[in-house]
Length: 103
Image (cartoon, rainbow, N blue to C red; front, top):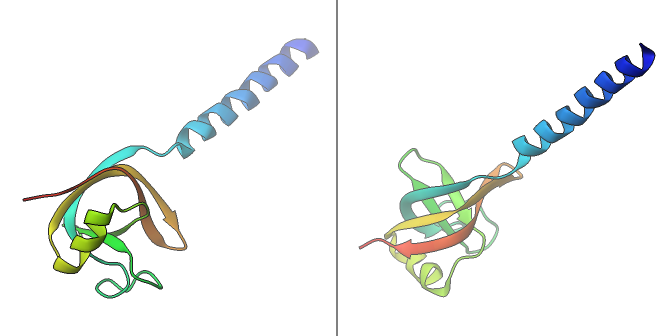
């Protein structure tokens, strides 16, 4: 009986680790909004960086912005970014897998 209870406890503990790991995996999202400078326009970064402001008012710093996106941030153009979102020190960041300017 003790072995059975120990086995059940081990299964419950192991499944909780698997469940917690699944909850922490970032999901890929598609964001649409207006580009701007994370420092000059949105005041979210300590130096110039590409950032995207969505319709709901959230601002996402694009961590790996392409040269085209970096240049366009000064023009407040529409853009679409696909990637994984994380939060660092209260600031939303997107690790982009796809970036494009919307025409």
